[in-house]
Amino acid sequence: MAKQSGLGDQLFIAGYDIGADINSIASLSTPRTTLPTTGITQDAMERIYGTRDGQAEFTSYWNVATDRAHDALSTLPTTDVHLMYCRGSGVGSEAIGMVGKQIDYAGNRADDGSFLLSTPVQANAYGIDWCQQLTAGSDTHASASNGTTLDTLASVSFGFQAYLQVFSVGSGTAEIRIEDSANGTDWLDLTDGAFTNATDQTTERIQSSSATAAVRRYLRVVSDGVFTDLVFAVAINKNLAARAL
Image (cartoon, rainbow, N blue to C red):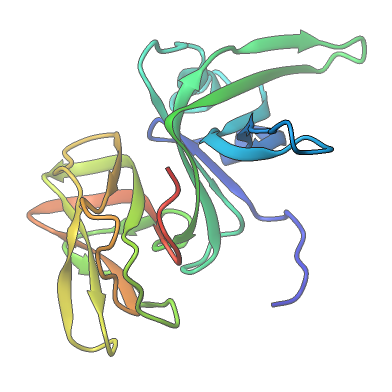
């Protein structure tokens, strides 16, 4: 694939689609701790990997309209928030999924009159997953539907992690799950790939219960149940090697 810019990106947090209110993204980092293991026989430091981590920081405009950036960020929740960054908006495009703590919402009024706010999020328990989008950024299903097929090119047996952001449900209850297929025609529910039923704005992270679970070549997201106007986003990391701790 050719080189790309960051134009057309999206940012979702806590069930809010606030990409249009984002001025810039300062950091999407996946640091790893290193542990010194240098023996007396060595002439230089020797290290092994320890725990992984994740950090995100972005700058938003001041927008106090309903469901916009101020609504999403000003509450500074003490519970975890779910963040999804989409590099472009297309099924198969890259995305970041993250569960973490929002630790600030800091405003800066510059002398040119601009008022921008910085929000850092630190990962909690899972680090960051680089994923592929199973929706085109966000999708709207007016009723039960099958999503677009994603060809991941190969079946693997290292499990998965997946992320859901539901922005709204017009009415009813939406059942959202991931299916996989060996040929793109015959579909089965992906084991552990069902999210909790959604009736309103919500977020969720799921993962395979086994780190060696098989995930077949083709994937799609499916909505079921009786509902109207489900607006949501799903991204999945289909592990290509042993799951990172």
